[in-house]
Length: 112
Length: 118
Image (tube, rainbow over all chains, first blue to last red; front, side, top):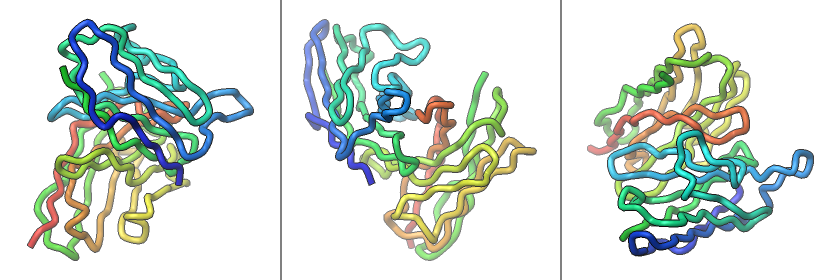
């Protein structure tokens, strides 16, 4: 199975500041035939299901604010929130879908 | 509106069985793969099982293989998870999710709680 490891486990950022969350996969999730990274980012607020933010490592889901961006390729990925808003307090997860034995990172708790 | 609604959770004794359902609406159900993901209390997300749009291909996490069975009834727009030989460590909120054409989980239900305890 592909193991996904996020860092840090928790992060405190001031309002308006940048937040950066990292995700590393145990093997490449870049599919060479289409040059796409099979990596997604989700946001989960307390008592709610996860919400898809980013897929193909850098494509924002419809309706997601443009302060959220994803980058990286191969085995190393980053989720960046350019200017933290109060409503961004949540746990963030990366996920690989390169293999149908899907796996998630352990989560990063983002606080203010 | 695209919607997924899970049901069937509850309290069950260790070794018991439970069947979860997820009713889909707002999209052509048979065209999309679906998945179950669980979250133990206070813990992270764990993928459990997946199924192709036709139901011809199924996938399981090692932790549930041989005990859980995923299926779907495309005529009823419903996804199922049959859970047998339940253990305390299966206690979690179970979410169903619609898998997009690329493979990310675009839509999630609200979840149903399963508690395995004597």
